Image (cartoon, rainbow, N blue to C red; front, side, top):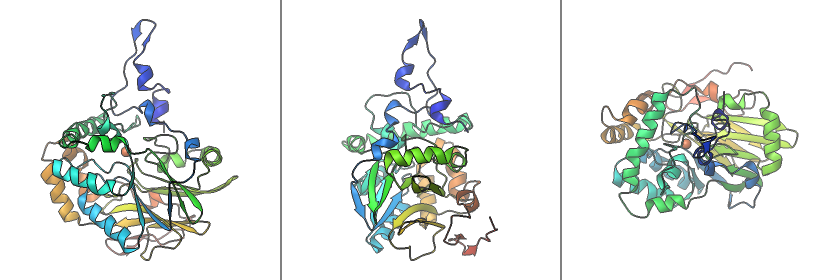
Length: 357
Ligand SMILES: [Fe+2]
């Protein structure tokens, strides 16, 4: 897999605007690039933590799903947990009233910007499209639809004053401590807001351990909680500098596995979840869990369909996944060898048989 930043040979949008030997350099396609201000670098996370919690829920990819927001608020309240929204909490909330409600409820909690909020908050158009930094293997039609959704969403964001400024004021990363474990909360990966290096495919690449060891030394982070790639993965690494867990929740507001409709959030706590997680890793005395987010999907389906009629970009691009999940399974997401909790389907209560690793 080629990473987006490398796919354009490290050329940023700002650099692209320059002419080369009297010739205008072709601009990369909107939706394929990482704007320069997306980069923060792993070293920026080596700071004093902004959050200290006993139980932390990291919620990535809510995508404007209000029933999923109801569910995560209830889940967090039931155990007095701290909520952090790690970006892309807007996406399908094209209705201006829905957008305003999601904005208000999310910004009452801790939150960072995803590429969606970052592009919505810009006062000057950079040509980044949706800011997804889609890698080359993603079909151009998908990229075009995403850029179209962002254009529609911008209208909803600008319908009420102050919303874009509030999004612009959000940080791009947060650092938390849970039971003495340092948690780096990012949207993409440890280096960039729209980085794809915390996808399941990227984490399998040769050299990942060496890279993460350098990241751990630079960032002093034990657990990374990410999202953005929209497909969940959790991996534990025994690095020379110490243990690390990378937990990508996939999507809180959209189905993550084939044949399912529930979202997933990352729970990090000094005590295990009282329910059955999809996956669990342990680091020190802290549990890192992929928790199913069961929301009223019938309500969500009607809300989505009312906002995105037939022929609209989101309907064409996402309806199949929303209704029946992506071509991805729990076995793609979670390593059998570093898992201590049971794998199961929380919707159907069907236990997934685990083969030996
Ligand atoms: Fe994203």
